[in-house]
Each structure stands twice: as structure tokens, then as C-alpha cells.
Length: 375
Image (cartoon, rainbow, N blue to C red; front, top):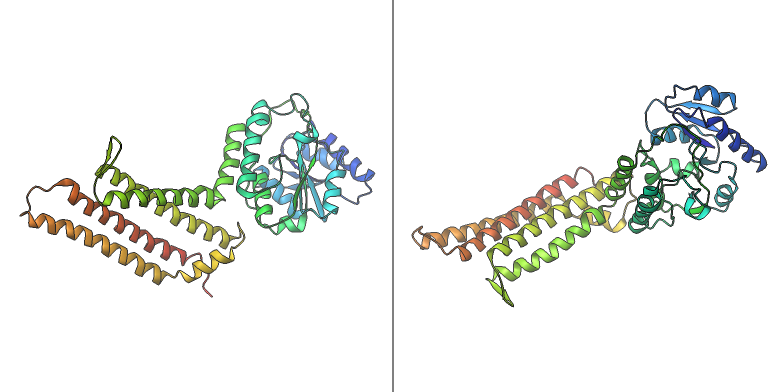
């Protein structure tokens, strides 16, 4: 049993007693580990007096404390929970049963098990937790309904193999996300939540920590954050650009001309930039082990060498410069006098678009050489 702790003198002894009692009833040869994050209220002495093993963690943060506790734990299975006496530490059987049945990560579901009045803030219960849990299921296919329950059990070796990195409250999101994307067996069991027994306010800060969870969820999903928006911009931008490059177009009573052409070119440029960032982000996450490798993607990235990107980018940029040259030649044909803006500006917009896209291809291709292994 693992508990992170920062000044939990009011409730820590009760939590340790409940956990040790549950382990004894289940006939489990286990220990209670308290990962202390710098308590100054006597929590360390209380933990030792109650028979827990204390691990002092100098790096501050909920995630940092749990990572250190997981690293020093001695058991095959680890069940973690907060030390505020809000979780059912006297009911560890459902978590242990699911782990013995083959699950790698078992997350408690407070919505199924029951939330006592006053145990969870209204904002968390009806907005924050449901929205973030839905987002986790949508982006990563994680089959759990209470994404941020602090009581969960797992196989220590499997979770250690994920190389978890975050220090703050987003650690809970990282554990669930990376377990899912690495194809670990993730399940949930009902658990209850009661009002915590502390007289002080909790360490959790709703907006700050909620944003950290949300930021982690979207930044570790390049497809939703970057790739899908990029494809949308590219498809719509290229379609509108090609349509308007031929000249002004009228639909009903509305005329679309050079201004819409510029807007379409802007969409294409943004799409190319987001697409390039999506590729770089995915390659970087794979290289660091944050996401598992994709055989199709890895094969494609290895084939797309810096030399090919350089040639493709130079061809596009040279074509763009050719468009600018056509505009200059048309200007020269008029003895460098006034020009009809619509016709000439189309050459310039096309030149800008091709030049920017070409340079982006070169930059992305060269940057990929830093993160993609070449066999």
C-alpha cells in the first residue's frame, strides 16, 4: 500500500491502520509505504509509529512522491491512495482481485461505488472529472469512467516499465494514458469516496491542476491536437485556393476573389505547419518512449530522408520563385506601370504559398534527422 504524504498528521494514522487491517484480513504479506514530500507537522513520526515504511522524497509534487514510492516498493502489486481518509482503504479486495485476474492497472470508479455528500466539489463531480474522463476515452480509448480517481492498483513491474515522468497532479493522467497506449490491461472497480478528515484545505487546486491534466491529455495526442486540424486546414485551404486561382468566383449573390484566395493560402500554410509539428511531435514522443512506436509511421519516416525533403522543398520553393518572376514579367510588359491587382496578385500569393511550404518541408525533414533512427 502506497500513500503520498504532505502534512497529513490529522488523518495519516487512520489511513495506515485501515490499510494494514485490510491487508491482514486478505492474508496478504504486504507493507504500507508512506512517500513523504517534506511534511513538517509530525507526519513522518506518526507513520513510523504506526508501522509504515517512510520514503523521504525531496522533489516536490504529487507525481514525484508517487514515483519515488513506486520505485522503492517491494511488492509485486502496488495499491495507491491519498492519505486524507477519503478513500476506502479498508476495502482493498476488489483491486487485488482484479490484479490477480490479470489486470495491469486497476482504477477505482467513485461514480459507481458512491460519493458521499460533500466528498467531491460540485465542479469536479459534474464538470471537471466527467469532461476529462470523456476526453481520455475519446483520445486514447481508455475504458474507465473515473479518470482521476486517486485510488488505483497496478503491477509494479509493468508501471515501472512505462518510465513515468510527470511531477504534479497530472501523474494520474499520465499513468492511465501511457498504460493504455502501451497496450497494458486497464480496468476499473467501484470504490467509495467520503469527505476527507482534514481541517485544512486540500492540496488540489481545481483550475490549475485541471488545466495540467487537460494539457497533458492533448499534448500527448498529436493526432487530435495537430494532425486532424492540419488535415482539415489543408483540404479546405487547397480546395478553395485551387478554385480561386483560376479567377474570381460567384456563388449566389456572393463574389469570392483575391481576399478569399489569401485566406485560403493562410489556411494551407497553417495546415502545413501543424502537420509538420504533428510528425515531429509523434517522432519525438516515440523516440523518448512516451508513446509506442508505429511500424507504418516509423517505416515512412525512415524512408523520408533529409535529402528527399531537401529536394522536394527546393523544387516547391523554386516553383514559388517562378511565380514571382511571372508577376515581374507581367509588370515589365506594362512598362512597370499600374497593374490590374487581381491577376498579378494571384501569381504573388501562389509564389508565397509554394515558397513557404517548400521551406517548411526542408526544415521538418532536417529536424527529423535529430529524432528518427536510421538503420
